[in-house]
Each structure stands twice: as structure tokens, then as C-alpha cells.
Length: 241
Image (tube, rainbow, N blue to C red; front, side, top):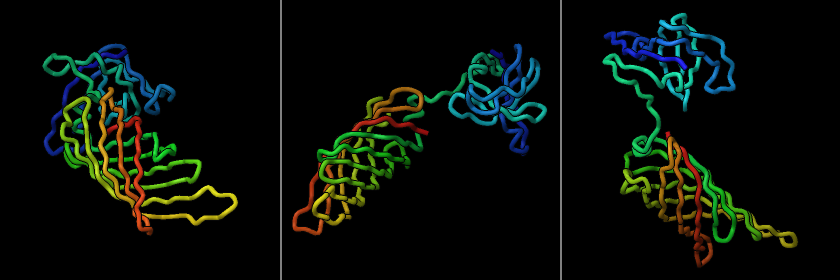
């Protein structure tokens, strides 16, 4: 495991490369991998006394550049024992609950029950603020009577984003397509608009992951005199960026 002495290079009006943090190898060497993973082969070694530029981070891997211009990936374990210019320990920035609160994007998969049918949902969300977010979701529910696909756009409100177990409320609208499972009679497929309101909770786990559970009440706006009311429960895992 390599040991680094870190120093920030400050060059006014310099090009983008001069803005990268520069670290110096202070013990043994570090290994450059061709990609961000241990399964990628080592193709280059930077020895003690040489400097490398830290370009960006992807999960537990840093993309770096050697003095000879070679680009590679170094695991954060090789950056654990580092020193700042003032002699203090250089800390690897890892995702934590503060990052969870300040997240911009999240995505995940949930599964549960939609009016008696098994439902699976894929979603992606974008946070305007710590309290307000927008979300797009696509779901499929498979039942004995019919197969259902629906997509929704939702507005989310999270009143206590700093809580590790953080409740939220949501409202939204979308489209639903219902395909009956019939063998003798051939009923027509239905496509209707739908509205929903729901409540849920996000539970921060660690790093970039959290558990999400929610309840939704859906109203399907049919062409009949009565609209359909369907309850939905689901739980799943999500990742934030």
C-alpha cells in the first residue's frame, strides 16, 4: 500500500489539468489499473518520489494521471495514509449521511403489492432542494386476471432530510395500461389516466445506499361512472449520486 504526501497546486488562470490535486508517492509504489476494479489488469507503476494528478473518483477508485501522461485507476486503499501540506492526515472523501441529505439524483428498484398483484417499480429522481424532489417511475404488476403497466411523474416532499429515518409524502399523475388475461373471450386492453398520493420513508444504510418503503393510493380515471381505487405497498433499495 502506497503512502502519499498530498499538496494542492494553485496556479492562477492555469489550464484544467493544473487544477487537479497533486499527490506524491512517499512509500514503495502505486499500481495503475486499466479500469475502476480489481479485475482490471495493472499496466503501470508509479514509484516513490513521483507525483500523480487525481482527476476524478468513481465508487472506491480514483482516475489518476502520471508524470508521463499515463491515465489509470488507483484504489482508495492506496490513498488512505496521506498527509496534507500542513502535516495532517489526508482523508478520503466517502459517501455518508451528509451526502445522502445533499444528494442530487437517486435511483432504485422496489417490489410489493398492487391491488393483489405483484408489482415491480424502477424509478429515478432529481432533488431541487433538500426538501423537494421530482421523480419518474415505471411499474409492472402481474396478476391472475390481468397484466398492468403504468408510469407516473411524482412530486416529493421530505420535511426532515437530516433524519436517518426520513419520512416523505408524494403526489403525482400518470398513465396505466391494463391487459386482461383471457383465453375464451378477448376483452379489449385498457389505457387510462391515473392519479396517486402516498407516504413513505427513506432509511439511510451506508455509503451511497438506502432502503425505501412506501404506500400509495391510486385513482384510475376510467370511462365508466365509477373510478377504480387501488392500494399499493412496496419496499426496495436505492442508490444516490
